[in-house]
Length: 275
Image (cartoon, rainbow, N blue to C red; front, side, top):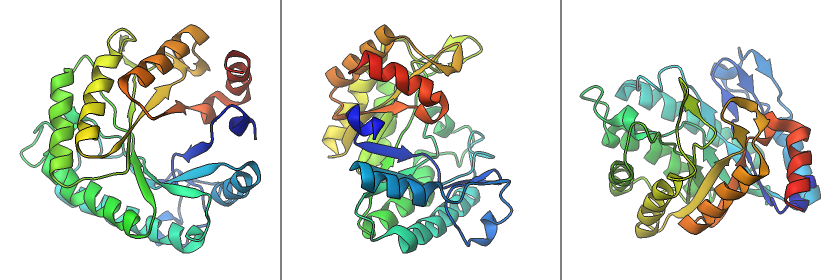
């Protein structure tokens, strides 16, 4: 209800399951039974809460990060797709008639530089054909929309390279309903920020341009956390600048990430800053 009052009428539940670690719905899949932490009621309770508040939900699918940054081989992509399809089918059998569900979210983070031929088989075509397309088409065939939230790193790519990457993905046949590009303003590696507020708009406009060409809805996934502490909320001036930049780039919606980690303290501050 507090999210709805802030104007956040849609909620993204990032994962249905995280390989070996977390499970958020009552699954009967064999490969999920040895999951370490089971919070099986998160999805059903979230659906009940969405009904009461008038919100819509996006259900995250299956995530496995073990080989994702290597990146995966074609065989590993096939396995990842197969497991996502099993989770998708099970979610639909459980919740397919729930009108509060807007669609599904593919939680694997898509980044260009993992698919820039680090190996001969690490290609955009492999990523699209063996993973993204079959999962996306299966969900859409069930009447659910599909969202993905790619990220970029300004230290590793130019806006032009990012544009070419998305052109290649969409041209290969990957057609999600929503691309919510992570703005990267909170992320950093070894002290280097992934994105600077002064240049993030250049990257966002690039992605928006390609999304428009292929009729994919363009959103921005706005990182709320501080660069030096991912568990603390950034100040209101930075958040306002991120929001203004996303809107100027053409984002039809902006996701506030990650309220699950920032918790009530983060929500308290947002209510004060954006009444």
